[in-house]
Image (tube, rainbow, N blue to C red; front, side):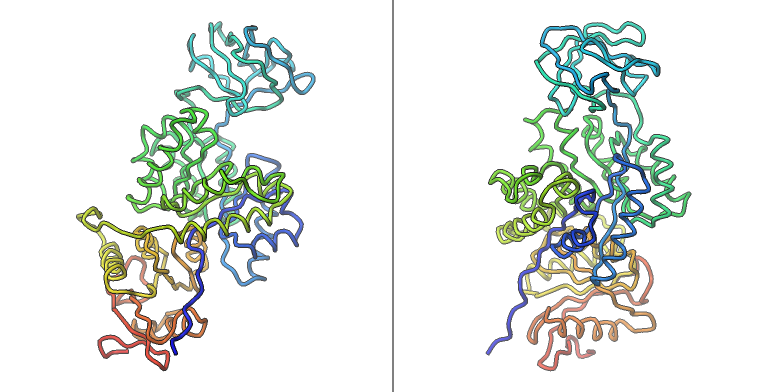
Length: 492
């Protein structure tokens, strides 16, 4: 009689934005139980104190549930918006003139003009440029720039309301990614000990370096997330990926700037580039948008999420669906269900001939050798002792179907690993143990939990000196005996 095989576990991670819909404690508990791995706090909306309270609630609820849940603080960045209208909104008619006025004291707008929040906008546009407002619903063509006034012609009948966002078709706006407001919010995020900080509208590597300098200056060791949502970011994609810890395919503003037709190919490119450069990647925006109002997703949304999973994304994200929708728990459940279905179709076939050459670190080489064994020897799992989560990240870049059980006694490291595909972080204190003792202890825990069975082969990775960051330099191929103990070269 053969031992029962462990049940399928979801390898793709779920990020869910918190908001009014998840504020009731019973709803927060339900969405975490449904499978949320990382929560997103969107500092673009509401008072920062509300996001701080949500972060505290998540920490308390995760502790109650015995789960590792990461917290991502999403900075607002330099989002350009129109100001307010006297009546809250206006009806615009195609062919009419409509002015954007870059001045602080502009009165409430009407059907002829409205103020804009970015006072340098007149210097960034010329006649012929197309400006897209409210995610492209409103289209204006610049006909002249007269000092602080941008004269435009309305291209389509539409309604424009207060504080809608503004993009320039094709990109080219000069404002930097880190605003003074962002700097203030990074200080707040540092006090919250968030695990991730997302930089909105980054243009280049320097934007990410600046955010990292500000965070580190305030004692914040959060991983930095580059949100790819500007046309300039596509031009500088490689340098941005290298300067970041995590990359987000932020499809809303990116789709507006570069056009819907280009978006699918760029999504695949960003995922591919991130994984190849050993960075974690999130796919976001309107993935299950219909579930704001509906308890079930559309078939198109199911395919959208599944394709991102099959393309190799680490995580998929819910925004309005969980923050303000009518069905936040069902949205998480649907996302989890779709991910698991798509993972069954994912074909792990790593081309090691195309893998990175000239590796500078021993742990990178160990990760490559480990995943080679997984693909060619028939391994049930990888068991990795890791101090900071770096080894787990290198292992997960190879996109195998083999689960990676990553053991660390650092809660912050385990929460960062909550965003890595294929990685299941577990608490284990290996201080004072030899690598052999750590192997015995960690594998015994997995057998007790029903995640491994006698007869299973595993690859165990560790360093000669335990509890040393970046010191992973050994691997062993082990087999679990009938007594639940692992045996390899005779040592264990």
